[in-house]
Image (cartoon, rainbow, N blue to C red; front, side, top):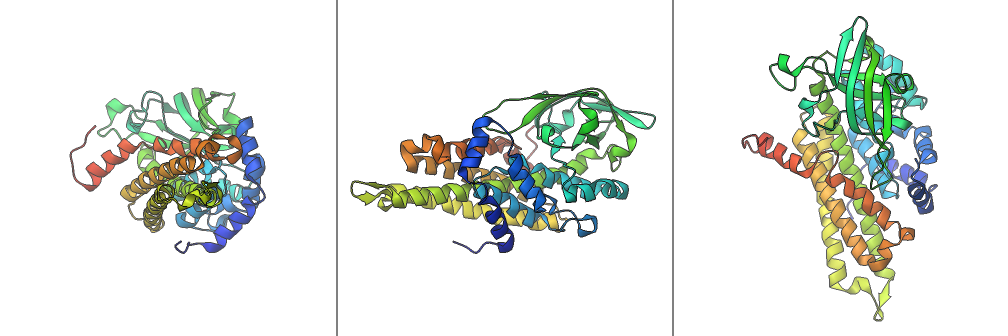
Amino acid sequence: MTAEPHGEIREAIRALGAQFPDEYFRRIDAERSYPEAFVDALIGAGWLSAMIPEAYGGTGLGLGAASVIMEEINRCGGNAGAVHGQMYNMGTLLRHGSDAQKRTYLPSIAEGTLRIQSMAVTEPTAGTDTTKITTTAVKRGDRYVVNGQKVWISRVQHSDLMILLARTTPLADVKKRSEGLSIFIVDLRDAIGHGLTVRPIRNLVNHETNELFFDNLEIPAENLIGEEGQGFRYILDGLNAERTLIAAECIGDGYWFIDRAVRYANSRVVFDRPIGRNQGVQFPIADAYIEIEAANLMRYRACDLFDAQQPCGAEANMAKYLAAKASWEAANVCLQTHGGFGFAAEYDIERKFRETRLYQVAPVSTNMIFAYVAEHVLGLPRSF
């Protein structure tokens, strides 16, 4: 296998992951609970503050290193979906937050006493057409009053702060649909039960996600990030980081599936020979591994551009597409290699199978990635 960048980080995450064996994650999945002990261990070791500059108590690592942390969480059998929001939300605050906001929040996030795990963008009627969101934030004196609804908003119940995208200028009053949107920091400790209602959504995987209802929620004006009306542009940075981190998680899943498939193919004996000797078994595993390695290269390309503060929308989208596709193919190969045992919960494949399937749909669908590449890379006319 090829040499792996950030070897020291990988070794540290693997050592931490070894403290949480398959049985731990299997139990968390069965109970539909949150991996609190695992998350606490990550926070305590400083891994979730990796992108915070040293001046604010973090380690000042880039997206490339952060992506390796996410990859290794999945590679050790965990699910980084429980924590990855802190990484990409960090980018939004770091790049567009005021000095006062950074001084207020970043040191506490770095020391682990404050969590910023949640981002509220998606709405039931808008879906991936973000410019059509209808949640409004109207300024009244020194506060903004928020009304509307969000859906598929994750980790709200395990976060202290949330990044919120809302419309501050009516759609009819802007020249471009992407104008008039703003982003805010919402203190969930004050908001829930005081204008914000959270309704959990039970879903295919053990992933805490929710529907949110805003009813005259008041947010201090100083919680506006950047300029009013420029939120859509700001949020794109966070989305590019999100897609790249998701790609890394899929790569971690992919390697996990390959490792399990190879191990089983070497040990499982049928007709007096290991099944891995059969080309019908080994060729699909090799094919899946090649696809993961290729996706890995695009992941690092996107990370390098992001860390250099260069445009990386195409690379982030392509990395997410390639990695999600590769991990899903590896999942199928791993399940097929194990045969009936792949369906048994004690082998953990069915759990990881469900978890990696999500990324064919979220956080951006395959067809939306095709549309982005067609328009912004190939110069084809906009299709929607």
